[in-house]
Length: 443
Ligand SMILES: NC(=O)c1ccc[n+]([C@@H]2O[C@H](COP(=O)([O-])OP(=O)(O)OC[C@H]3O[C@@H](n4cnc5c(N)ncnc54)[C@H](O)[C@@H]3O)[C@@H](O)[C@H]2O)c1
Image (cartoon, rainbow, N blue to C red; front, top):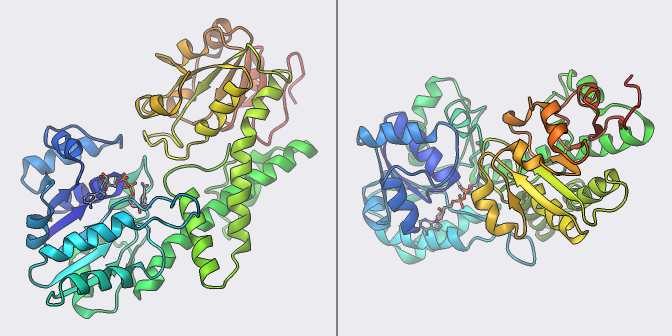
């Protein structure tokens, strides 16, 4: 099949490359010239493990190409996927549909023969109706169907998620569109990925409900972690103790500095706005969104407290800047709340991240970016682990302790066994586990 992806970002590029890998002929369109020029030269605009290889092999086999020419690629396609951004609208938290509406208008102008327009971007309930109206207005003569097909891939594991999804949700009641979508996903269907057909509005809501539920799970364990700190319990064991219950499950029960990223913060907000407009009150999701904001803002105070109550003149080494490991995505990352607050409190911040430093640099003025974790820790009064990159899990703690001014670790991801860090003479703070000060016995 001939498929066109509008938007060559995390979702459009990964989906496009994976569809090509399944044998479809895919054109990825983006209106960012530099991005397309880079892709044509084999440079990935984002960091996603394995993406460069799958792009290179499919380009070599002529199944994947990149262009800024939307018109030709839409005219040739049987299905056109909208994968442009839907950020939070400044001021009110609604999903900003400017890019989606603009893409719909452009697509309309170039439609040629029956075409399925597939919304992969995360969009509020009713957006499919709007896209249909825009296209109908631009091209009353066009033959098309608008389908909702939300994307559930996780950055950092995007290729595997796309190729082995838990489910594929397709929102359409048009029999022709359903046939086209079945053909698009046939390679995955053979892998036994459940293909769930719903009406369009339901599919749009599935995506928001899924993200809101996951955000709720994270926020729940974060609050339990706070309680653990107050009552002297260990949240890791609580999470395990509840996660082994099949009705609950172990995933998304890792406490931390609050959720970030390109999806959960904006999608919870957008869902709250949708519900308000519909006259429904989503009190749980509203609480989750508020609690998470407060949590992210409160992380600097934890570091300052560990430093003895003041960060003035102290040096803090931050390991991990991206919102999660295996991505270079800095959107809504907890580090963006933490670092400026530490700086305001008088700290000098050094930072290291395996992939995120380039995008982070313009967002974090005044930070010194280090070569590696040891360089980052040199001369620091506190080492703060903000993102759980694999390469931070087995640091040479003796060496870290030697290069630091004083051995203090604040582990916001609970990646170290407290006793191990403590045995190297560190004061150790984590999330929801007993605090360990120097010289204290470890139980
Ligand atoms: N990033 C994720 O993990 C993820 C997961 C699931 C769903 N989503 C959703 O998918 C959508 C896209 O997210 P993303 O992270 O890939 O965004 P992104 O910002 O990485 O990519 C969007 C791309 O679209 C391009 N674009 C915008 N308007 C265009 C136009 N008119 N023509 C051509 N190109 C255009 C931009 O230049 C950009 O390269 C969002 O709605 C997001 O919520 C994202």
